[in-house]
Length: 154
Image (cartoon, rainbow, N blue to C red; front, top):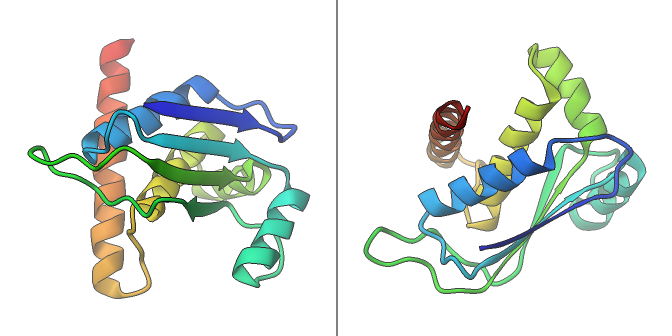
């Protein structure tokens, strides 16, 4: 699996943890090992520009997803084809404010946002209540499973 992480923000983040999480999430979702994913961390100004350009909404946001080949999750019996999954763009400054409000670490917020972004790349959405339940349930399951794997590593 090719997962490229590019931190263009001024915030130091645990890129190795983001890499491990993305690998875990894509494995759980049965995405082809040759799929390509890019994770980019940007500052508030860059995120605001993307947010206005692509969502027509003002101000910076926490995460944006830009799917490429419109891949969908696979199954144990049929993994997704290889391809370009797309880009997840994170804004650590916005994530830090959210982490403080939620009472947890920036690392945890970025892991959650990365998972959220990956799910969007794979076609999940949360516009309707049923979609939201499915997406957020899967997001929770991935994060819980990843936390368990991380505990086993230490």
